Image (cartoon, rainbow, N blue to C red):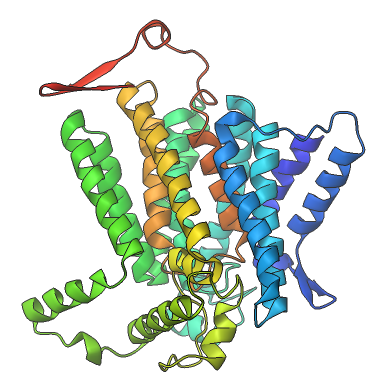
Length: 428
């Protein structure tokens, strides 16, 4: 019964924007209500045992510390209601991981949860094509704006969010195509993948299109048999992304190179790109002013409205998931999040080297990269239950190598496998 409830939770989270309701000044959703029911069920039944499995405890620990730190930051935040809203969402993220590691215990249950995402994607695709063909927007508040250009948005708040969702779902569908043995399911996934790709281009979201291109190139690279070349390229790309996230000032050098090469004045850029740069610059100022402790989760928008030194056209969200964690929650939480991601990717790369489920591992690696790159496109993901639900599933599968394996090759059981790069051997 609890697993069924968890599956419903995953499905409903994909439609958060149309199912939310306000109560006592706080936004609630069916997901939050379901989590409360699950917690009560866990507390008042003999089956309910709060255990943390070692294979997934890194993300549980990070989210637990994140929740505790957010509570502590109530002491200095300027906008307690904003922090309360994010605290509720962080609690949900913790719930997704905690109950997931307890309930998703085998390949069949993974497939059931993935099936919930598949069903939700079918509905989102249908709504997207309905909007394109009929100009009928059932859930969008910006009907005139989107209908003029024929942009699909489904139940999401804007096209960037919808495009980012579709980019992530593309890799989920690729995973189904490689793993599922049901021919009809695979054919349906191929059709839905094609539909999702076309909708991404229809959204006009540059971030989502970039995600799609990066994901396709990376996935094709991961399927290559030249393991050494693939790992070198992935390592270089990973180091580059970490450097750009950890040291945003490096963007200045890239901008100068771009300006000199193409005779473009970056400082003269107008529109959304200009405001995004202004928002990021303000955010780093706020981070410095907070002495690295963070202004408090959910408080960046308040600071943008009251303490910003650069004009942002009343846009308050960071438009960058990584820097939102840094500016909002501070240095310690940011480092913990980055370390948890690195540990997850270390396990994925180990599985990729072993080659026991290389297609699935390649899918997971690409999914994580798409999220890491694409999370700078939506205005914020901290309130997005659908994103936390998908991340929970990603973390659970990635940190449990055996969850999708029905059998383990004897070679893997009995001996260590050495992958040689010239004179060196990488032992897994």
